[in-house]
Length: 174
Image 1 (cartoon, rainbow, N blue to C red):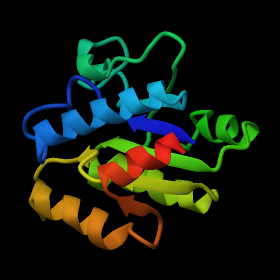
Image 2: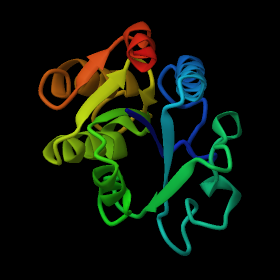
Image 3: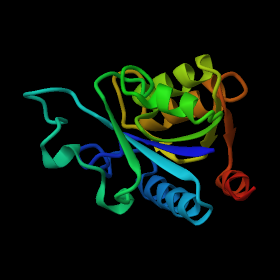
């Protein structure tokens, strides 16, 4: 089992996120539990490319201070929504014969959605803890509507197991 922490970068981890405080608290709990239980934590960062705000080399590109990776924890960079496309992550997990992936991070309706669906297509068992992914309002839905649509309707039992934090923490201890 691995904890996949996606796009928790300084530029986009802001108080505009749905249930910001709960999101931050839950990610910190999951990272702490993974380290305590000796589960691998893998970070993924999004790079929009030169000339954009979310670009390698800028402060906003770096992992949010409260979620900082340890030096031995892996970081993969991506330039598309899915953490599995052209990053090396897919080969890395397959070479480890890893099947269980806990997915957390940003944003629910973009990179989390793409990663969950692609992970499912590649045969991974995806777990999504409650309030460990988030997003902001868009032109079509509020952040709350987006969160509920994906977590309560779209992913659960189709592409992933959307379960409580307590259930996830217990699963990490097994």
